[in-house]
Amino acid sequence: MKGKFWIGVILLALGLASLFVSVPRREERKVSAGDLSIGVQLQRRERIPPAVSIVLIVVGGALILTGIPQR
Image 1 (cartoon, rainbow, N blue to C red):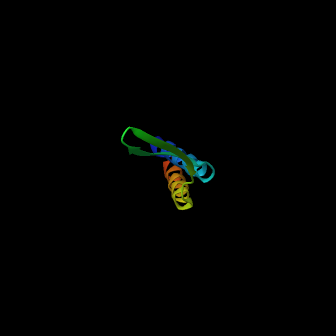
Image 2: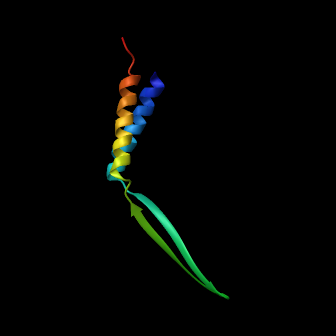
Image 3: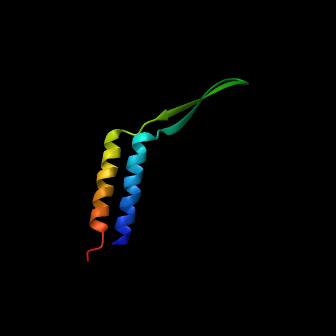
């Protein structure tokens, strides 16, 4: 039962964090012609869709509630 509780806490924390923190993404594009090579690195920060965050929060909360030991 303790395992469910702690997994729920982790999922809940990830869900809340994903609402506010964006994920960095790096892309590299190259063009080569003979001995000449030109490359560009692109960096973007993308947000996780709110639906994914809500699912993480709901599942985390459910695991916390079902993982609390009964007296």
